[in-house]
Length: 144
Image 1 (spheres, rainbow, N blue to C red):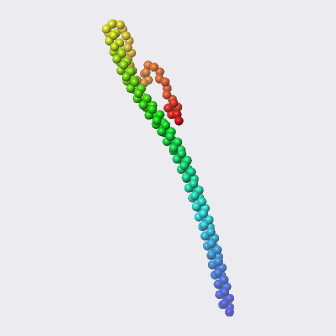
Image 2: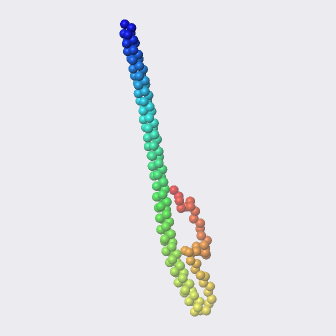
């Protein structure tokens, strides 16, 4: 008879061990679920932050592209105007050379002394222009 109570008690010990094991397993599974839930929430929050940042950067990019387009249009306009001014300069220089030739011819035929100043090459040496140049400020060129 003494062996029967030991079997009963050992069966009870096994049940308690299984119960403790099951309880630990249940707690671990619950902890894992909570951890996975927190991980998913963090991942979702990070995804929302990145999505918001993407939208913000796209808006900034759009604004920058608009500014660049505006500057490019201004540049093209100024470049075209500059080309017109160069053509006018070439034409006026040619006219002035012609007038100077006529004046020199007239001076040579009449004997009347005429002082004809030499025309500076304004494209190569703009600092030698006979008239003052108006400064161009950056604020005039890059208005948004």
